[in-house]
Length: 243
Image (cartoon, rainbow, N blue to C red):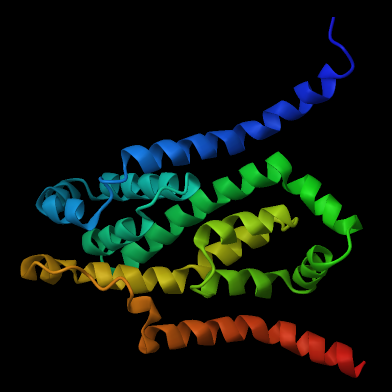
């Protein structure tokens, strides 16, 4: 006979399954793939990858998306190398689109796991709480799209944090997917562009400049886009003060 105290645990236990699966997958991926997803691995296998792509373009594209989904969903290190590979194999426009699609699907998997696991409870607590958490949620609610675009566009916000935070404060799935897809596109295009030129990098025996996103000619436009995302929030606050 099941006791009264056992029933809540039985009901809530399944909600932890997706989070636990992601945590386990992240640990296993980081341990077993830490030396695999590297620039050197890409350089060593470039000819085989190109040959496979030429013979099986669609299959290669689907495999690439699937790999990127797993990298993002389980937060496995190596997404930057994968983005470079996307540019190297598919070119700027197709590589950017494939990477953004894979990253968005992977980020959505984390979002849904976190939201289903404990996001709803945390969002409900924020509704009744006071202080910084409540102010953050209220600010986000004023203009969710602007806030969500902002955390995607600013390079200083870690991708994993930007994936989880919206789920923990009650953001809707639709807005999350839209802002993720379009918000990560500029930064993804930059690294894909670097990947397009990997052939010359390989030939010279050098390594790509992965810090290019922080160079003025790249960072400036990204911050400009972030400022545009922030503009509606500023305007609303100014109008509120005047009112």
